[in-house]
Image (cartoon, rainbow, N blue to C red):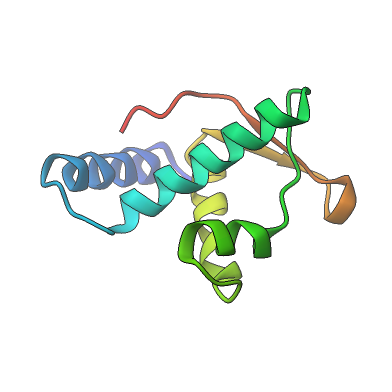
Length: 102
């Protein structure tokens, strides 16, 4: 488990990007990933979604070649306590556990 300090520093960094209005910065993409997951959950009519990272890459970046970035954003959202990820592959369940506050 990542330390509380790491999470707080990370969220501070994200808030600073928001306040500085950095376009296409790290925060902008984290928010896009979060919104994509939220829509996926709404569309699934359950409390989770299992998106293909290649589809997310296409939706957010316009091509399917950014899966590693999508994975990193999902990992950060998970480490910072916004989402949970259980299972792998077709069994994966991504749930939102906290509203974005950055």
